Length: 314
Image 1 (spheres, rainbow, N blue to C red):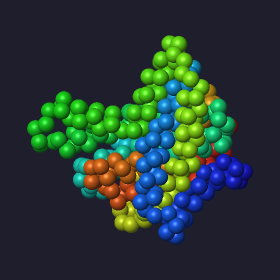
Image 2: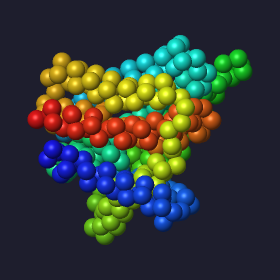
Image 3: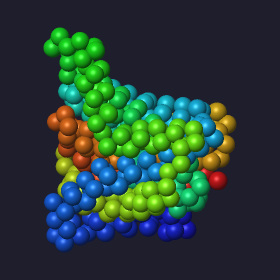
Image 4: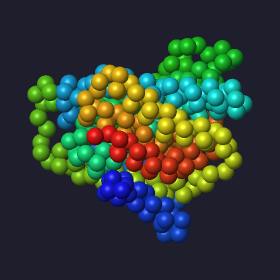
Protein backbone atom coordinates (compact mmCIF):
# COMPACT_ATOMS: atom_id res chain seq x y z
CA UNK A 1 0.00 0.00 0.00
CA UNK A 2 2.94 2.34 0.67
CA UNK A 3 4.02 1.99 -2.96
CA UNK A 4 0.55 3.01 -4.14
CA UNK A 5 0.27 6.03 -1.83
CA UNK A 6 3.83 7.35 -1.97
CA UNK A 7 4.92 6.51 -5.53
CA UNK A 8 1.99 5.97 -7.88
CA UNK A 9 -0.75 8.15 -6.40
CA UNK A 10 1.01 11.55 -6.72
CA UNK A 11 1.50 11.07 -10.47
CA UNK A 12 -2.10 10.03 -11.03
CA UNK A 13 -3.42 12.81 -8.79
CA UNK A 14 -1.92 15.34 -11.21
CA UNK A 15 -3.50 13.47 -14.16
CA UNK A 16 -6.80 13.26 -12.26
CA UNK A 17 -6.70 16.99 -11.46
CA UNK A 18 -6.29 17.76 -15.15
CA UNK A 19 -9.18 15.41 -15.93
CA UNK A 20 -11.37 17.05 -13.25
CA UNK A 21 -10.87 20.65 -14.35
CA UNK A 22 -11.53 19.67 -17.98
CA UNK A 23 -14.69 17.80 -16.91
CA UNK A 24 -15.92 20.82 -14.93
CA UNK A 25 -15.14 23.20 -17.83
CA UNK A 26 -12.63 25.05 -15.68
CA UNK A 27 -10.00 24.46 -18.37
CA UNK A 28 -11.17 24.68 -21.97
CA UNK A 29 -10.25 22.28 -24.76
CA UNK A 30 -8.22 24.99 -26.46
CA UNK A 31 -6.30 25.54 -23.20
CA UNK A 32 -5.61 21.81 -22.92
CA UNK A 33 -4.41 21.75 -26.52
CA UNK A 34 -2.17 24.75 -25.90
CA UNK A 35 -0.69 23.21 -22.75
CA UNK A 36 -0.04 19.88 -24.48
CA UNK A 37 1.48 21.68 -27.46
CA UNK A 38 3.84 23.51 -25.08
CA UNK A 39 4.71 20.30 -23.23
CA UNK A 40 5.15 17.97 -26.21
CA UNK A 41 6.66 20.41 -28.71
CA UNK A 42 8.90 22.45 -26.42
CA UNK A 43 9.24 21.52 -22.73
CA UNK A 44 9.58 17.74 -23.12
CA UNK A 45 12.04 17.99 -26.05
CA UNK A 46 14.14 20.38 -23.91
CA UNK A 47 13.95 17.87 -21.02
CA UNK A 48 15.18 15.12 -23.34
CA UNK A 49 17.90 17.36 -24.74
CA UNK A 50 19.16 18.43 -21.30
CA UNK A 51 19.06 14.90 -19.89
CA UNK A 52 20.61 13.04 -22.82
CA UNK A 53 23.30 15.65 -23.51
CA UNK A 54 24.67 15.14 -19.97
CA UNK A 55 24.03 11.40 -19.75
CA UNK A 56 26.96 9.00 -19.60
CA UNK A 57 25.90 7.08 -22.69
CA UNK A 58 28.84 4.71 -22.49
CA UNK A 59 28.22 3.90 -18.84
CA UNK A 60 24.46 3.49 -19.33
CA UNK A 61 24.62 1.60 -22.61
CA UNK A 62 23.16 -1.83 -21.99
CA UNK A 63 22.42 -3.82 -25.11
CA UNK A 64 20.74 -6.66 -23.19
CA UNK A 65 18.39 -4.20 -21.45
CA UNK A 66 17.43 -2.75 -24.83
CA UNK A 67 16.99 -6.26 -26.24
CA UNK A 68 14.71 -7.31 -23.37
CA UNK A 69 12.57 -4.17 -23.57
CA UNK A 70 12.27 -3.88 -27.34
CA UNK A 71 11.73 -7.61 -27.88
CA UNK A 72 8.65 -7.31 -25.68
CA UNK A 73 7.57 -4.15 -27.50
CA UNK A 74 7.83 -5.61 -31.00
CA UNK A 75 6.23 -8.89 -29.95
CA UNK A 76 3.31 -6.86 -28.57
CA UNK A 77 3.02 -5.03 -31.89
CA UNK A 78 2.90 -8.20 -33.97
CA UNK A 79 0.43 -9.91 -31.62
CA UNK A 80 -1.84 -6.84 -31.76
CA UNK A 81 -1.47 -6.53 -35.52
CA UNK A 82 -2.06 -10.24 -36.20
CA UNK A 83 -5.05 -10.68 -33.87
CA UNK A 84 -6.76 -7.49 -35.06
CA UNK A 85 -6.27 -8.46 -38.70
CA UNK A 86 -6.97 -12.20 -38.48
CA UNK A 87 -9.58 -12.51 -35.74
CA UNK A 88 -11.14 -9.05 -35.40
CA UNK A 89 -11.44 -8.41 -39.12
CA UNK A 90 -9.91 -4.93 -39.04
CA UNK A 91 -8.57 -3.23 -42.17
CA UNK A 92 -4.80 -3.38 -42.84
CA UNK A 93 -4.41 0.28 -41.80
CA UNK A 94 -6.43 -0.27 -38.60
CA UNK A 95 -4.30 -3.31 -37.78
CA UNK A 96 -1.10 -1.24 -37.98
CA UNK A 97 -2.60 1.51 -35.77
CA UNK A 98 -3.79 -1.07 -33.22
CA UNK A 99 -0.38 -2.72 -33.27
CA UNK A 100 1.22 0.67 -32.63
CA UNK A 101 -1.02 1.10 -29.55
CA UNK A 102 0.35 -2.20 -28.26
CA UNK A 103 3.92 -1.14 -29.11
CA UNK A 104 4.31 2.41 -27.80
CA UNK A 105 4.65 2.68 -24.00
CA UNK A 106 4.25 6.00 -22.23
CA UNK A 107 7.93 5.79 -21.31
CA UNK A 108 8.46 9.48 -20.60
CA UNK A 109 5.36 11.10 -19.09
CA UNK A 110 4.56 8.15 -16.81
CA UNK A 111 7.71 6.02 -16.77
CA UNK A 112 10.18 8.69 -15.66
CA UNK A 113 8.15 10.22 -12.78
CA UNK A 114 7.18 6.76 -11.48
CA UNK A 115 10.81 5.57 -11.54
CA UNK A 116 12.06 8.78 -9.94
CA UNK A 117 9.56 8.60 -7.10
CA UNK A 118 10.13 4.87 -6.56
CA UNK A 119 13.92 4.63 -6.73
CA UNK A 120 15.33 8.16 -6.80
CA UNK A 121 16.54 10.57 -9.48
CA UNK A 122 19.71 8.57 -10.14
CA UNK A 123 17.62 5.51 -11.10
CA UNK A 124 16.20 7.07 -14.27
CA UNK A 125 19.47 6.81 -16.22
CA UNK A 126 18.36 3.42 -17.54
CA UNK A 127 14.99 4.91 -18.52
CA UNK A 128 16.75 7.68 -20.42
CA UNK A 129 18.89 5.12 -22.23
CA UNK A 130 15.68 3.38 -23.36
CA UNK A 131 14.01 6.70 -24.24
CA UNK A 132 17.04 7.82 -26.27
CA UNK A 133 16.03 5.40 -29.04
CA UNK A 134 12.36 4.87 -28.12
CA UNK A 135 10.65 7.50 -30.26
CA UNK A 136 13.10 7.37 -33.20
CA UNK A 137 12.99 3.58 -33.39
CA UNK A 138 9.27 3.02 -32.81
CA UNK A 139 8.07 5.96 -34.88
CA UNK A 140 10.33 4.84 -37.74
CA UNK A 141 8.94 1.31 -37.48
CA UNK A 142 5.30 2.40 -37.15
CA UNK A 143 5.41 4.96 -39.95
CA UNK A 144 7.27 2.55 -42.22
CA UNK A 145 4.72 -0.22 -41.60
CA UNK A 146 1.84 2.17 -42.27
CA UNK A 147 3.41 3.65 -45.40
CA UNK A 148 4.13 0.21 -46.85
CA UNK A 149 0.59 -0.89 -45.98
CA UNK A 150 -0.92 2.13 -47.71
CA UNK A 151 1.47 1.86 -50.68
CA UNK A 152 0.40 -1.68 -51.61
CA UNK A 153 -1.05 -1.66 -55.10
CA UNK A 154 -0.08 1.98 -55.72
CA UNK A 155 3.21 1.20 -57.42
CA UNK A 156 5.16 3.32 -54.93
CA UNK A 157 8.87 2.50 -54.79
CA UNK A 158 10.55 1.29 -51.63
CA UNK A 159 12.87 4.30 -51.61
CA UNK A 160 9.94 6.71 -51.72
CA UNK A 161 8.15 4.93 -48.88
CA UNK A 162 11.37 4.92 -46.83
CA UNK A 163 11.97 8.63 -47.47
CA UNK A 164 8.43 9.51 -46.39
CA UNK A 165 8.87 7.49 -43.22
CA UNK A 166 12.22 9.11 -42.45
CA UNK A 167 10.89 12.63 -43.00
CA UNK A 168 7.92 11.88 -40.76
CA UNK A 169 10.22 10.75 -37.95
CA UNK A 170 12.76 13.57 -38.22
CA UNK A 171 10.02 16.21 -38.02
CA UNK A 172 8.78 14.88 -34.65
CA UNK A 173 9.69 17.32 -31.81
CA UNK A 174 10.57 14.53 -29.38
CA UNK A 175 12.95 13.01 -31.90
CA UNK A 176 14.49 16.43 -32.58
CA UNK A 177 15.12 16.86 -28.85
CA UNK A 178 16.73 13.41 -28.63
CA UNK A 179 18.93 13.94 -31.70
CA UNK A 180 20.06 17.35 -30.45
CA UNK A 181 20.86 15.79 -27.08
CA UNK A 182 22.95 13.06 -28.70
CA UNK A 183 24.85 15.63 -30.78
CA UNK A 184 25.44 17.83 -27.73
CA UNK A 185 26.56 14.79 -25.75
CA UNK A 186 29.23 14.07 -28.34
CA UNK A 187 30.38 17.70 -28.44
CA UNK A 188 30.54 17.94 -24.66
CA UNK A 189 32.54 14.71 -24.53
CA UNK A 190 34.92 16.27 -27.05
CA UNK A 191 35.55 19.24 -24.76
CA UNK A 192 32.84 21.77 -25.61
CA UNK A 193 31.90 23.93 -22.61
CA UNK A 194 28.55 25.73 -22.52
CA UNK A 195 27.88 28.61 -20.09
CA UNK A 196 26.13 27.81 -16.83
CA UNK A 197 23.34 30.21 -17.75
CA UNK A 198 22.47 28.03 -20.74
CA UNK A 199 22.04 24.94 -18.56
CA UNK A 200 20.10 26.94 -15.94
CA UNK A 201 17.61 28.01 -18.62
CA UNK A 202 17.36 24.47 -20.02
CA UNK A 203 16.79 23.02 -16.55
CA UNK A 204 14.09 25.60 -15.77
CA UNK A 205 12.28 24.63 -18.96
CA UNK A 206 12.80 20.93 -18.28
CA UNK A 207 11.34 21.13 -14.76
CA UNK A 208 8.06 22.37 -16.21
CA UNK A 209 7.77 19.50 -18.68
CA UNK A 210 6.45 16.58 -16.63
CA UNK A 211 3.92 18.46 -14.41
CA UNK A 212 2.55 20.31 -17.44
CA UNK A 213 2.39 17.16 -19.54
CA UNK A 214 0.72 15.09 -16.79
CA UNK A 215 -1.85 17.81 -16.09
CA UNK A 216 -2.53 18.22 -19.80
CA UNK A 217 -2.75 14.46 -20.23
CA UNK A 218 -5.63 14.42 -17.76
CA UNK A 219 -7.43 17.04 -19.84
CA UNK A 220 -6.83 15.09 -23.02
CA UNK A 221 -8.05 11.83 -21.47
CA UNK A 222 -11.39 13.46 -20.59
CA UNK A 223 -12.23 13.59 -24.31
CA UNK A 224 -11.61 9.90 -24.90
CA UNK A 225 -14.65 8.11 -23.55
CA UNK A 226 -14.61 4.35 -24.14
CA UNK A 227 -17.18 3.37 -26.75
CA UNK A 228 -17.44 0.27 -28.91
CA UNK A 229 -14.48 -1.74 -30.15
CA UNK A 230 -14.31 -3.56 -26.83
CA UNK A 231 -12.33 -6.54 -28.13
CA UNK A 232 -9.71 -4.32 -29.77
CA UNK A 233 -9.37 -2.21 -26.60
CA UNK A 234 -8.95 -5.34 -24.44
CA UNK A 235 -6.33 -6.62 -26.91
CA UNK A 236 -4.33 -3.37 -26.69
CA UNK A 237 -4.54 -3.27 -22.89
CA UNK A 238 -3.41 -6.89 -22.62
CA UNK A 239 -0.44 -6.45 -24.94
CA UNK A 240 0.77 -3.18 -23.40
CA UNK A 241 0.11 -3.88 -19.71
CA UNK A 242 0.67 -7.65 -19.49
CA UNK A 243 2.50 -9.13 -22.47
CA UNK A 244 5.16 -6.42 -22.83
CA UNK A 245 6.35 -6.34 -19.18
CA UNK A 246 6.10 -10.13 -18.78
CA UNK A 247 8.29 -10.74 -21.85
CA UNK A 248 10.71 -8.01 -20.72
CA UNK A 249 10.95 -9.50 -17.23
CA UNK A 250 11.42 -13.02 -18.61
CA UNK A 251 14.19 -11.97 -20.97
CA UNK A 252 15.77 -9.77 -18.30
CA UNK A 253 15.89 -12.76 -15.99
CA UNK A 254 17.35 -14.92 -18.78
CA UNK A 255 19.98 -12.27 -19.54
CA UNK A 256 20.68 -11.83 -15.80
CA UNK A 257 20.24 -8.08 -15.97
CA UNK A 258 21.48 -6.17 -12.97
CA UNK A 259 18.78 -4.77 -10.70
CA UNK A 260 18.85 -1.13 -11.96
CA UNK A 261 18.61 -2.21 -15.60
CA UNK A 262 15.82 -4.70 -14.81
CA UNK A 263 13.86 -2.01 -12.98
CA UNK A 264 14.14 0.49 -15.82
CA UNK A 265 13.21 -2.02 -18.50
CA UNK A 266 10.26 -3.65 -16.73
CA UNK A 267 8.75 -0.52 -15.20
CA UNK A 268 8.93 1.26 -18.56
CA UNK A 269 7.37 -1.77 -20.26
CA UNK A 270 4.48 -1.79 -17.79
CA UNK A 271 3.31 1.70 -18.80
CA UNK A 272 0.10 2.30 -20.72
CA UNK A 273 0.18 3.53 -24.32
CA UNK A 274 0.75 7.28 -24.41
CA UNK A 275 -1.16 9.98 -26.25
CA UNK A 276 1.29 9.45 -29.11
CA UNK A 277 -0.60 6.22 -29.88
CA UNK A 278 -3.71 8.29 -30.55
CA UNK A 279 -1.75 10.93 -32.48
CA UNK A 280 -0.35 8.19 -34.72
CA UNK A 281 -3.84 6.78 -35.36
CA UNK A 282 -5.21 10.28 -35.96
CA UNK A 283 -2.39 11.08 -38.40
CA UNK A 284 -3.49 8.22 -40.64
CA UNK A 285 -7.21 8.21 -39.81
CA UNK A 286 -7.05 4.58 -38.71
CA UNK A 287 -8.58 3.02 -35.56
CA UNK A 288 -8.82 6.42 -33.88
CA UNK A 289 -11.61 5.36 -31.53
CA UNK A 290 -9.67 2.25 -30.47
CA UNK A 291 -6.51 4.28 -29.82
CA UNK A 292 -8.32 7.03 -27.90
CA UNK A 293 -10.25 4.62 -25.71
CA UNK A 294 -7.17 2.46 -25.12
CA UNK A 295 -5.15 5.44 -23.90
CA UNK A 296 -7.87 6.24 -21.34
CA UNK A 297 -8.64 2.68 -20.19
CA UNK A 298 -5.03 1.48 -20.12
CA UNK A 299 -3.85 4.58 -18.24
CA UNK A 300 -6.40 3.84 -15.51
CA UNK A 301 -5.53 0.13 -15.43
CA UNK A 302 -1.79 0.86 -15.39
CA UNK A 303 -2.12 1.84 -11.74
CA UNK A 304 -2.43 -1.87 -10.96
CA UNK A 305 0.23 -3.08 -13.40
CA UNK A 306 2.72 -0.52 -12.08
CA UNK A 307 1.83 -1.42 -8.50
CA UNK A 308 2.41 -5.12 -9.22
CA UNK A 309 5.83 -4.66 -10.80
CA UNK A 310 7.03 -2.16 -8.20
CA UNK A 311 6.09 -4.66 -5.50
CA UNK A 312 7.80 -7.53 -7.34
CA UNK A 313 11.06 -5.80 -8.21
CA UNK A 314 13.55 -5.33 -5.36
